[in-house]
Length: 430
Image (tube, rainbow, N blue to C red; front, side, top):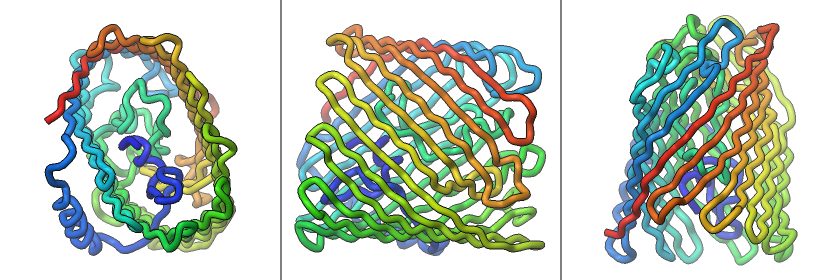
């Protein structure tokens, strides 16, 4: 399993690796030193054994976007070129998985002031250590980007990967720098050949260079702690349960000015079913309760949650789909409920040619009734055609259509963009 899948799917499982939805709850920054100690102990076990693969790559991408900021106001097209450099590492054995990536996106030339942030940086690392009955995992990512031009763990051609759990795409129509840290250590233990328990802590921390009511962006940190239990009923069916306790704090410039606190608990019950060796589904339903508070007000709210995940493989095609409602932390200064749909398809057209299609749509709504700036509907559709020219060189071309309707605006915003990417990638074994 790749880094990008763990970014979205969360805790791995001995019974069903990589098919568990994200979970969470509450120890605050005091927990970070302990997490660092655990991580150092885990990584101390990465010694010689299997080879370490280095995966350097370099790309030049040309782009055209008729509404890069996805705004309903006046706008001009944006066009230019971009350099994408990355170095990945990978080491996989029966007991250890180590995968990481460091990437830089650098604008070489771009018209207009939408792309005033000239570079994006991303660091991502996954470490998994498997024992006979237990499994330790540490995942972490840091990115410096903007909501207008976000950096993701996936790359353009990774259309078979789930999107990051970032519902702030298109939230604002200005390019404001964002620093976002995600840290997620977890542990699972097999009680028997049929059952397993596990726990996970997650920190999601975001800081903006220009936060505040001017752009309706707020620094935030979201802590979560979760526990889960699996039980295999038959060879094809498995019951899943999880309890997630979460705590969200937002502020302006590091100070609690107009910031809202949010403590919530999510309880989920699900069934995972394998239809065949090439098709599976995971169905979950649940309930949440949240307590919101600020300097001047407080209140409680609750509601239902659900998630459906499916995967189907054929000889030349892979389909994945996800539909659900869950709550996410947001730079809008609040937690939002998001009804989300994502569809991914990859089809091998020839030995060196493939086609991919990504569709993502969500409707986000603030848990607070007085925060309309977080309420909106967003959709993106991206077909991509990839041609592996030689063993090391490839050419990708893609089109992206985006549409967004904010509740507080009368009109919808639409954007069309075209990308052409030439990539050189030559993995080496150290």
